[in-house]
Structures are given as C-alpha cells and as structure tokens.
Image (cartoon, rainbow, N blue to C red; front, side, top):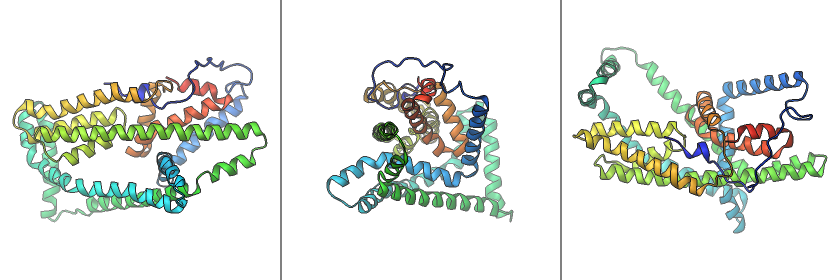
Length: 367
C-alpha cells in the first residue's frame, strides 16, 4: 500500500524541468572549506539535540507555525471584511479549537466504553486468533495484575502519577500552542517585514518575499486539501462502521480522520484498530474482517485516485526521505512529530529550491 504523500505533496507554479545541479562545481554547496562543512554538520546535530531536549518548548512553536499557515486563508477573509486582526484571530482560534474540544467530548464516552470492552473481549479474541494465544494470555495476566493490585493494597500511585503528568503535559503544550498561534496570526507579516528591512540588497529582499509567499500559499493549499480529504475519509469510515454494525460512527470516523494525517503509519494503525473492533463486536469471521477491509478500500481510493487528482504532480518528495523523516520525527516528538514531518520536509524543499546555493539539496529532496 502506498500513500500519495510519497509521490505527491503540494502544487507549485513551476512546471519546466530543472537542470540537474552540479554538486561539485565551483561555488556549489559542497565545494567549500571542509572545516565549514564540518561546522555546519555539528551545528545541525546541535540543533537536533536542542529540538529533542527542549521539545516541550520547540514543538508548540513549530505546531503553531504550521497551524498559522493552515489558518492564514481564514485571516485573509477576515481582513476583507475589515475585522481587526486580534478579533479575527480569536474568532478563528475559538472556532477551530472549539470544534476540537467538542469532538473530544463527543468521542470520550464511546472510547471509554470500548476500553472497558477490551479486557472482557480478550477470551473472544483468543478463540478466534489461536496463533496469538500466548501474547493475549500475557496481556490478560498484565491486566489482572493491574486490576488486582489495587484490591491487594499494591501501590498504584505510579500509574496515577504517570497519567496525571501526561494530562498536565498535554494541557500545557496545548495552551502554549494556542498562545503562540494567536500572536502569530495577529502579527501577520511583521516578522517578514522586519527581516526584509535589514537585508542590504534589493534582490535578497525580493527573494525572501517570494519564498515566504510560496511557502504560505503552497503549504496552506496542501494542508487544507489534506484536511478536507481526511474529513471525507472520516465520514466514509464512520458510515462503514455504522453499516457493518460496529456502532459509534463518530468515534471511528474521528479515529480515521486523525490517523490519516500520519502517512503510512496511520493507515496501517487504522487497519489494526478496525480489525480489533470488528473481532470484538461481530460474530462471524467474515463480518469481523469487513470493517477493516472496507477502510482499506476507502484509503486506497483516497490515496491512489482522489488526492493525486487534487494535488498537482509538479512537486514531489523523495519517498525514502519521507519514510526516514516520519520515523525520525516520530522518535523525536511522537505522533505530533510524525504529523509535522511531511510539512517540514516540504518547507525545506521550497526553501532549497528558492536559494541558489541550496539548489543541490533541493534536487536531492525531490522525488
């Protein structure tokens, strides 16, 4: 199973084939002093180390920046109606995150119900999946130890503390993201103007403005298109789960919507989740496999037909680098890192294509 992000990402305005850059020519990015190259590599490693250690600070900033690109068209609409930027930013943020909070509240009940079904449904799974009987028995033993530990007076404060810290960490990052996003939307092009003002040459000023506009337009178009397609996948998946008798279409549609933001890893995880849900809720083996099979069909139609038609094939990314970026940023920042991996790679590609000394790297990133 392939994913459109491996062959298609975002549309650009350049259609002419580019000349393959000579990496070793005079003035190229790899013909400089080896000491400079070594220092650049050390700087990159240091920046990645800082991104890992200070992820609690850096991740909300990167996420807010990407969300700003996604919500920028909404701010343009607000400006056409002469709405003040601060008020427009508040309205957009309240609308977006209000939907997120409402969706989370709507699926929290069904999710808790399915979580309660899992321990009691393990014998059913063991009966159907004999070849997995040993791992399931280990999981049953683990669940019994957790459940029995509280009755036997075993300490459970570690689990409670972990859950509390995880919730506190999420709430803190969520608030930081909203705060940074608000000021980014209010500031508009202020940082770009200040940066352009300090550049000495007019050609540099024009290049920076063009790069900024290209990043904003292309990444916004990509994120909006992917969000709409993920919403369509979520609606289709919810209808499939309802028709197949699994129930809770809002829950499963939301799961499919969120997982589709993570290329490759998300859809495979969705297949496993819907297979588990079918095995827990359906009697016949064919009926139990049907939800996961139909979800796979929906993903193939969306990923191989519809999304490539909506996104132009003029901007491609190296599929191997996409996989490496997904794995690396998932290791660095977890699920948010996997979601941000492709947009960050696309932004790097646009910058490298627009800056002549970095054209060779941009060519390397190209699919």
